[in-house]
Amino acid sequence: MVRIKSRYLLCEINVTDKSRLLLLDDRAVMTAVRTAVARIHGDYGAAQCIIGVSVKYMNAHTGMVFLRFPKRCYKLLWSALPFITCMETRGQKIPCFLNCLHVGGTIRTCQKFLIRYNTQQLHRLLPKCKNEDEKHVRTALLKCLLPGETRETSAEEADSEEDEVV
Amino acid sequence: MKGVSTQKKSTGYQRVVLKNSAPVLENESTRLSAVEFKQFIITGLKILYGEVGAALTFDVLKYDEDSRTAFLRVPSRGLVKLWSSLTLLGSYQDQACAFRILQVSPFLLALTGNSRELQLD
Image (cartoon, rainbow over all chains, first blue to last red; front, side):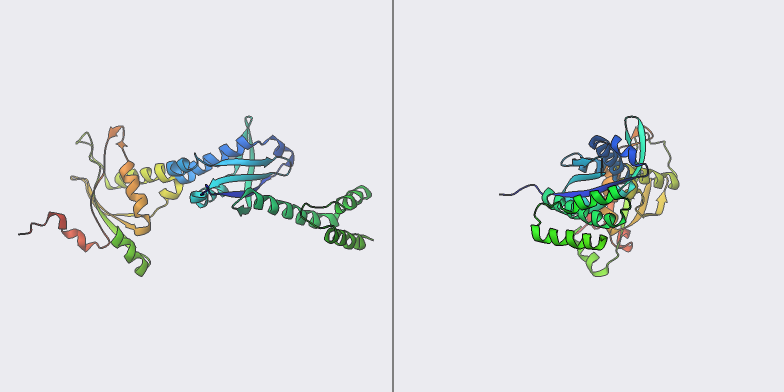
């Protein structure tokens, strides 16, 4: 048995104005990618973009996107992504750029990476909490368990974090 | 093509010279200067391969306006791109045209004669 192989790119959409991120949808991302590829790689690139290219997942709140490219030409399509400077949706132009975080062969590995990445970001941001409410949220978050993580390790981590706070 | 690719491995950089009969135009009276000729090829590259293709370096070594024949020099890594875009160039200023590649060689001197036209007894 042979399966069709593809590459999944986990990209982060960076916008200057966070509130406008919610306006974006997967169709806007798809058009932006298509136009960028057509501009950079011409008709040849646009033709590669027709089959097997799609936006698999889009989280407008965090700005995370899963892009699916065919394996044989993903490097070509990937090279056009940095040239995206704005996305158009509902008649509005949103200046933004794509930041590629991970390239994986399956959605599963990408999802795993995304969870790990978000945990790292959380650990980076939580020590910066200032007022009581934020600290409350932090302790609540630290008690949470990630899928695939054992109770002991996460508990230890939570304890150590709490020790630092106290 | 096979010979070209094997030699590329040994030298790293390899130039390929195409002896190229430029647009066979519908209207024979249309004249094309060397600059227009190169611009035309670059446009073709840009249509097919976009801005990346338009950045491909190639030189017009010699251009003959009357016969519309030119010598093009291109690094071997860009040969396929250039050749395919020449093939797909179909019109110049709304009139049909076509490119004929007469000879391709990694050496300029090899273009002095065409081995395909040799008369062997």
